[in-house]
Structure formats: structure tokens, C-alpha cells
Amino acid sequence: MAVIDKKSLRRQQIQRLQQLVPAVKQKQEDLILRQLYDSALFQAADSIGVTFSSGIEFATGPLIKTAWQAHKTIYLPRTYPESHEMHFFRYQANDELERSAFGIMEPQAVAQWQNDQPELLIVPGLAYSRDRWRVGFGGGYYDRFLRGYQGTTIVLGLPAMVFSEPNWPLTKFDQQFDHLLTIEEDA
Image 1 (cartoon, rainbow, N blue to C red):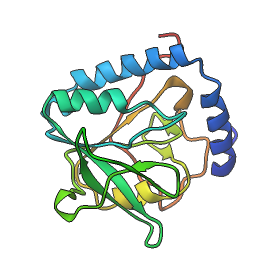
Image 2: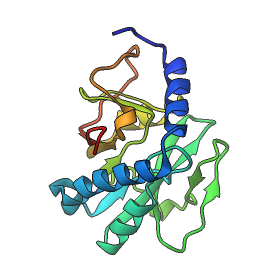
Image 3: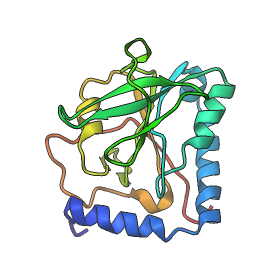
Image 4: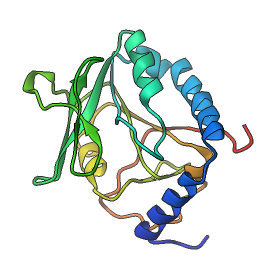
């Protein structure tokens, strides 16, 4: 397998995800979310960290709503570009979100709502390998965060995002995730 640099892989994956048929993407997301909801990890977790998705990403809106209905507490990340840090803050249905410099919707930074150790963390990205490596959007926020995270990490991978093994270079900064939920392409 030919190795591709991460910048080129990101461009390739963004283009690939933009070309997904919306109805097919939604069906795949629904099937993967069903796996998540049925998992003991999801059922046991009282607190879940997840990104508020946009555009080409795996849609997290349904996950957030289902978690609330199951009386789970949702935490969304807030990035701090000046320090290259990321922290998670509680997000409830009526909370206002702010658009970050990266265009991502983020929660307000209220100290008493911060929780950097939710029990379950849904890790976003553009490419995932079956041996648990990922390529994100290039800021390094999640890899830095994961170094100190002690809970369980799960990736929700559309078939277009999943590779049998990394075809990108791994660095000492890359952090593995714990679990990959995906489906076969023809599902």
C-alpha cells in the first residue's frame, strides 16, 4: 500500500466525503449509531464527549438527542488556539453555541460545566484504520487531548473513512482510539 502524506489524505477524504449521496450517508450513520446505542459502553456511560458536527462529518445531532433522552450528560469541546488546548464543557438543549475560528460550534466556557474526563468520548476525524489510528482535520487538538484522557474512546466510521491499515505516516504525536464502529460498504 502506497503511503500518502496527511495533508493530501485530508484533501482526498474531504472530496470523497463531499461526494457521498446524502440518503446513503444517513442510512450508514443510522446503522452505525444503532451499534453504538446497543453497546454496553454507551449504555453504561453517564457522560459523553462529542463534537457538534458540521458539513461532511459524521452527523452527531441524532446521537446528542438520543443521549439526552437516555438522561446522559453531553460535553462538547472548546478549542483554545493560543495554547493549542481543548476542554470539554456541558451542553444542554437550550444552551447557545459559539462559532470558533475553525467554524466549529462550541459551548460557552463556564468553569463549573467543564469535564475533561467524560466516560465515553466520540473521536472525530477524516480517516481511520482498523488497527485504531486516525487522521483528523490537522490541528492536533484531539491527539494532545487524548494523551491525558483516561476514559473510553470510540470512532464512528463511515465506510468511506475506514482503511484496513494506515496508508499515512504515523508520528510520535498520534494517539490510538479504543473502538471502531463501522459497517460494510454495501449496507
